[in-house]
Amino acid sequence: MTAPAPPGAARTRPKARRQGWAGPLMALPAVAGLALFVALPFAMAIGLSLFNVRLDSFRPPDFFALEQYRRILVSPDFSGDFYRALGNNVLFAAVIVPVQTAAALALALLLNRPLRGMPVFRTFFFMPVVFPMALIATVWRLILDPGPDGMLNSVLGLATFGLFSPQDWLGDAATAMPSIMLLSLWQGVGFQMVILLAGLQGIPRQLYEAAEVDGAGRWQRFRAVTLPGLRNTLVFVALVTMILSFRLFDQVYILTRGGPDGATSTVMYLAVTTAFAESNVSRAAAMTVVLFVVVLGLTLLQRRLVTQEREIS
Amino acid sequence: MTALADRPAAPTRARTPRRAPVRRLHPRVRRGLDYLLMGTVTLLFASPILYMFIGSLKPDDQVLDGLAGFVPRHLSLDNYADVFARFDDPSTGYFLDFLGTSVIVTGVVVLGGLVVNSLAAYSLARLRWRGRDAVLVLVLALAVLPFEAIAVPLFYLLNDFRNTLAVQSVPLVANAFSVFLFYSFFLKLPKEIEEAGRMDGAGPLRIFVQIIVPMSKPVFATVAILSFLTQWGMFLWPVLMVNDPAVRPLPLAISVYQGQPPFAWGDIMAFGVMMVLPMLVVFLVFQRWFVRSVATTGLKG
Image 1: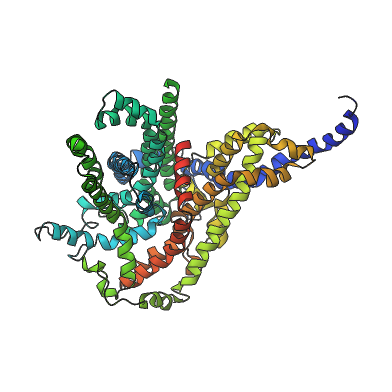
Image 2: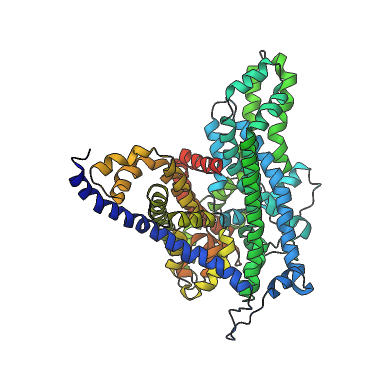
């Protein structure tokens, strides 16, 4: 051991030094990018929200402390719009999370049966996921067209033998948000379905066999084996969907511009219009900070719920 | 919506108790019902896409025509030619510019991201250096930041670089979530992996390229697919940074096109088909990989 040490040591020492530099060097490009384009803007979001920076003004910004937050959260001039937008995000989540998760579970259960051609069906159910939202919104503009020739109107007209009168789906405050939900569900459900399907396939066969031996019916097996086996996956899927609901933007921007009368405005939509159309970067930054706090809270909640389950099992 | 949620589940659950004793008698009927159900659901998912494809081949005034929109009549490729004709001047932009922008931006973000993020993840997972743990904590913390939370200050920060290809790609190359995916994969590789290379006197970079990368194809595919999906559809960032048609990516271009009257729906659908066709081909070829990527990221949480 000691005999070959001198030449060995001679060779390892420079190598160790090289590795000492290689580590930070290999990490550098990504870390620099993240520092410059993620960490710095995030720090700036907090910084900007404490001033009154405007894009269209050359005046040096004043320090505003928490004034921007007071405006969006308390002041009657601005908080109305903000709460409307936040409320729409909450409404979107409150409907989309249970409905889309249930639909995804139903689809995953359908696909998890021994039937020929399942890969083909799965491909179709999943396909909308790969479509850019801007394209989906464009196609759905035709489906939701207010005229009697709009696809949804004509299908409903046909199904009710002409009793159904055409709706202005995106132009009516009562139906605009449900319409946005419908196309979002159509696009997003395949994503959840695939995750749930992977979860279903991870449940050991023996558990089902044991339950069957015990005389459990299909419904009982679903409640006693499938649901507990999927618990973590379901929690994950539901929380990811909830986080995504707070980021809602593309379809709203393309289809309704937050209207009619704020019925489909969301925090992100409001932040972009505030920064962009009103040039008020600071108020927009304050909104995105609030958005981040909500998303972070949900992420931590998910971590907690999932780890708790791990500890129990 | 609710119909979609209930329809697939209800028959399966309701049918079993009643059907159990009869099952032996009607395997064919049962299978027929299964296929009918699957076919109906498939139709629900495929019809908007089918509608787009058929619409792209029809005269503009026959696209928005109720259910008849699905009936293929007077088909021609005129709409595709119209898209190129309409986008043939600097004020409206050129279709090939939109496509080129999307290809370049997506290419830089996906390929650059694979290199940069995997290198960082390897360094953080397998090499020892001073300050590594602090950097690791920082990078992993950034992975929970949604892009939306930094879009506004980033827009403010990079305002001078608007309407460039660089601003659409460079800031998005380094991605904390991609680093996280690579990191968790590299961490699980056995400790002895690098030994052979180290014995031969190979440095960390060479070990990474010659030993680690070849055995990490699944995670590279996963990250490539996920960043491709995100980037090809990226909308928020171009909305903020781009108003010059010369560097408009496809999603922004179609949103501008469908928002400006007069509406030539056939042309707009043709635009849509051309926008999604490259992606659809990639998806159908690597279908298994797409599904697996989404599923594995989901499971890892």
